Length: 71
Ligand code: SF4
Ligand code: SF4
Image 1 (cartoon, rainbow, N blue to C red):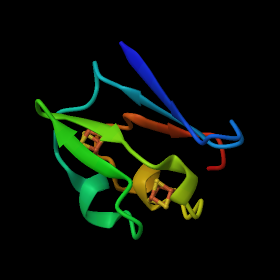
Image 2: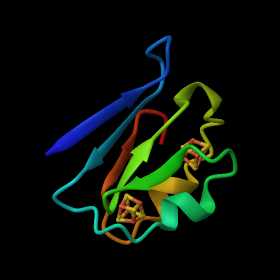
Image 3: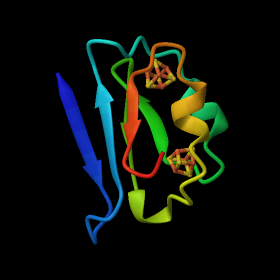
Image 4: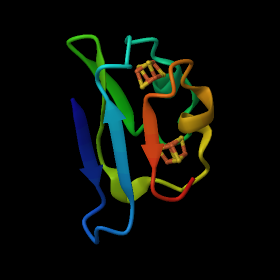
């Protein structure tokens, strides 16, 4: 299942593939503005408006579970 998280303007969309996400939490560690947290062992993205489009989350995920509209 793929879940989408978007900024309020819709300009930034983060998609997390829950079939791939293993809760490794690398995204939680690397995001400089704390977008990610784990809920029930899966990553969720909060406050996407704060995203600075650095792409660190996409690069950090060992399972390629994150797709980001800017990266
Ligand atoms: S780094 Fe990837 S596998 Fe780990 S919690 Fe984040 S999205 Fe899931
Ligand atoms: S692109 Fe950068 S700021 Fe945006 S969610 Fe990923 S790590 Fe965080």
